Amino acid sequence: SARKALEDVGSTKPALTNLFFVRTTHNGPNVITSEGHRWKHVKKSTSTAFNTANLKKMIDPIDAILEKWIKLVLEPCMKSQTPINILDEMNKITANIIVDVAFDYQFESG
Image 1 (tube, rainbow, N blue to C red):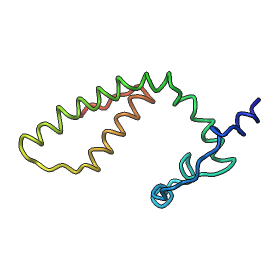
Image 2: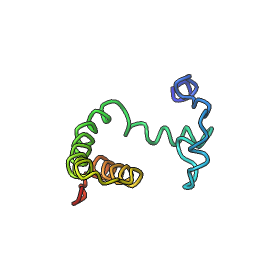
Image 3: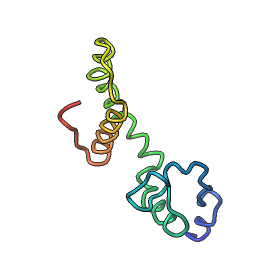
Image 4: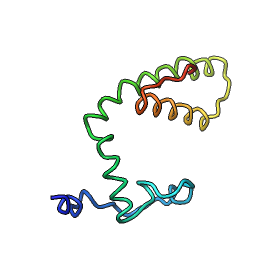
């Protein structure tokens, strides 16, 4: 039953040991920072998207995005010894992965 599933140890949120997300998340409660009923609701709402079968489908698009970034951004910067802003680059990669995997849309540039 649904109640048994929610009461199962695997359905309970472990205590947050790293408060980084609590201190840096400004968009309201999410699966990392929420507790109790709200956490269970968010977890249930997103669990299908992140089940094993769906995660396996994400591997190839993520790999393609990373390979493209390495070829178009990282390798040229390494050859020219040009520094990169790793935070900006990781944000771009994350955005590319989200729009590709979640919305089947690809940005034009790397």
